[in-house]
Amino acid sequence: MDLAAEDAPPVVFQGFYARFGKRALDICIALLAAPFVTPLVAVLALIVRRDGGPAFYGQARVGRGGRRFTCWKLRTMVADADDQLAAHLAGCPEARLEWDETQKLRDDPRVTRIGALLRAASFDELPQILNILFGDMSFVGPRPFTPDQQHLYHGRSYYALRPGLSGYWQVEDRNDVSFASRATYDARYAQDLSLPVDLRVIARTLAVVVRCTGR
Image (cartoon, rainbow, N blue to C red; front, side, top):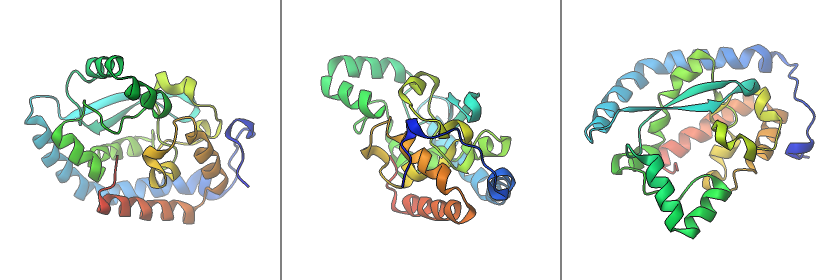
């Protein structure tokens, strides 16, 4: 039975995989993937730069233990994304309700044409392999949120884990759940954490990439 996110006790991992093996797996996969991912990111960065903005976007995220780190992506939004979001939410009550519930927009006016393609294929998140190598993230774990979203998150498991490039929320409901409900996914993942579970999530993530069903 799943634990309610707010009622879950503090998470303390005892198993060998959770304490040591998971990090070793992250490093091995990242190093094996780097020769293929690096040239792909370089080409995509040149394409993103064609619209005159920077190729990469770094944003503060909350990591394990509440420590903040810079999460890197290929830029998918216009340069003045924050201003455009504020104007859009002010002029569209439906968008404001959607944003308050999910912290995302299905029809986001900030996303560029190439950005929409990158998001559909999840290629915008490839630079996060660096975050994984640096130890800020894992291949599988809770989706990292921003410091200004922290008050919306009511759970404990997130803070015991490295945020993930993919995870339960990413391969299941993605855009179809509220932001607050992510805590339930994270509590369930903390309970299930094992090598078979991580390998299964990675396989499902690859299927999402192949189908181009990213957000």
